[in-house]
Amino acid sequence: MRVRLPAEQLLLGAAVCAAATALCAVAPDLGVLIVLRFVTGFSGAAGLVVGRAVVSDVATGPVAAKLFGVLMALGGIAPIVAPWPVVPSPATRAAGAASSGCWRASRS
Image (cartoon, rainbow, N blue to C red; front, side, top):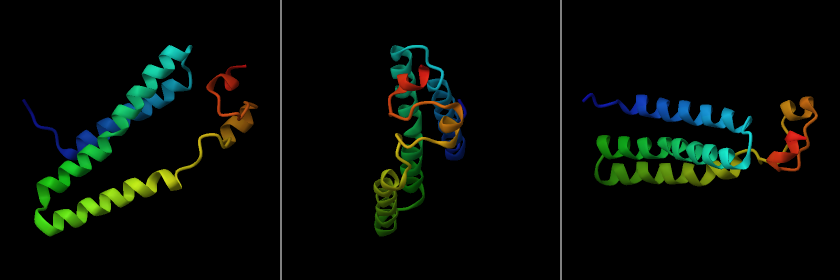
């Protein structure tokens, strides 16, 4: 069995995450949406796991501790600077979809 490189694992996780996210936009019902959101979250976590695995492989001691600290800081800052999900995007404004934050609002 071939061992995948971290970059391949990261790209695979990102590709699955992007595909699941795109499918969420066309989910026919709430059950499918929940399953796709689970897949999105699970595959999106690939970046965290691969990043920590790379640090474990390439560093030890104080250098590893410093790198893990940087990863933790980035993980804490990312949700703060990410765009709010209820803010309408140009695509939803152009489509005339409601921006209430409810996934069903864009279906009417």
